[in-house]
Amino acid sequence: MFKRFISYYKPYKKIFVLDMLAALFISLIGMLYPILTNYILKELIPNENLKWIVILGGVLFGCYFIRMLLRYFVQYYGHVMGVRMQADMRSQMFKKLQKLPFSYYDEHETGKIMSRMTNDLMDVSELAHHGPENIFICGMTVILSFSYLMTLNWALTLVIFACVPLLAFISLFMRKRMNHAFMETRKSVAEINGALESSITGIRVTKAFYNSEEEIRKFEVGNKQFVQARSKAYKAMGQFGSSTAFVTDLFNLVVLVIGAIFIHIAFGVDYVVLTTFMVSIGIFINPLTTLINFVEQYQEGVTGFKRFTEILDAEEEKDAEVVLPIKALKGEIQFEHVSFDYETTKGVLNDVSFDIPIGKTIAFVGPSGGGKTTICHLIPRFYPVSTGTIRIDGYDLNEISFEVLRKNIGIVQQDVFLFSGTILENIRYGKLSATNEEVYEAAKRAKIHEYILSLEKGYDTEIGERGIKLSGGQKQRLSIARVFLKNPPILILDEATSALDTVTESYIQSSLEELAKGRTTLVVAHRLSTIRNADYIYVVANGIIEEQGTHVQLLEANGAYAKLYQQQFKEEDILVNC
Image (cartoon, rainbow, N blue to C red):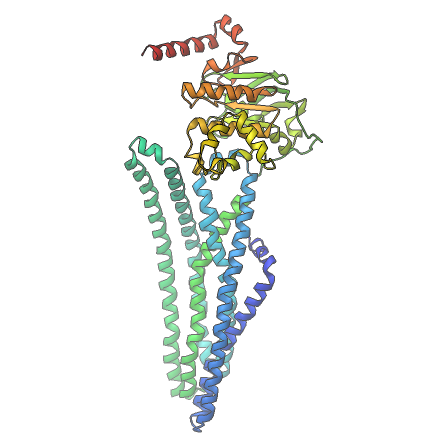
């Protein structure tokens, strides 16, 4: 993992090298103070050489000014490097998310994914900047200060340095516990983000049912889990910090007591050496303390990077192993003994076979959960089949690239998703290279052009998050315009009008019929009145095709379809009479 992390520095080698050189000079300048202190105490003060005291003071002032500029460089450009690395990682993660299969998003909440892209990568960015800098500056300072102290009195230096292994042992002992605690904190933050994203997205449902208290209760569960996880992390940090602080306090005690003893027994230590040691010990201890405190940032950065790599290592959608040189499809679809299981649900489809000729409209009806929508999801290869084969124009789906397959399929769903932006941008999503005139024509065919022109800003009207400023029918017509613009040979209508009122449904239905002309169309319908004119109808229940035929044939058979049809018309009669 370390080698993988280091690879992100490659595009910024120049900044990194300059950052490290600046860090080196910061460390070297830091050593001037104890060296000059020893020289002034030992040579200049006894000889009353005030001139050189002033000169050396000026030299030290100049060096400190240079160190100020170097620290500015390290702080500014070091952070810039970290932010750029963070941007690279975020871009890489986003590109990865585009390649992950539907099943990944079935198992991972949006808020948790967002937490990894924001909070986790922010900590990784801080580690990328402060990690090498702290290790280099502090490491160099410890080495230089140790070397200098050895020149003053090797025995006292070794006595002081004997405390370092104890410090290292405590750090290593606590590291594993802190790592686990911070990983649990990450998970709890992701849980909160997931709950927050879900609650905000569904705020209108919450208000409609007046269930704010329930949402608060659910949020507080995650909030308490966060407090518990963070408390464990702080407990581990507290144990770590207090233990290591105790050891660093021992350094000052050792210098004072052992130094005084060495003066008493004349073991190469005098008052000047002891004073220099007491001044220098801070330079020796401070970088050690910084490294100790850096462990917390290191743990947060490492756990964040681990969670980042979990997404990068997730299995991507597998495109066709051998891609056939196909650019366009006509629309003949065949299911040959197809079975399908979700990871958590088995037997969703069982040995399903059927043929759809080019340009025909086929309807799938039946109870919820029977497998209708799953059939539609298998055609664009949103999920791989468990067993069996699906063919389009005689080609196995596994021999057709995702690009060719999905560009030749248009989908209109019950739950229309519109992006934040303008009406023009949302329709153009069907064909990014489309001209404005092509967009206008698509809107006309979807019967929404006149409405758009009635708006103050027309096609430049902002529709809000998920199209919240539009009605259900308007959103549906925008999605139809998007597919008109795409102009695919295969069309999937998945409960496209089930969420609309009867009047709006009737109006939208005429647009859908226009859209379906000349295309192979698969319709998943709840209201059977909308699929009377389908060329063929399949009744899907319990993962199998129970009945098939035309509307008239199925009514004459007086089976499951006839019962569904009669039941719906009874319900409609009751509503009319009411």
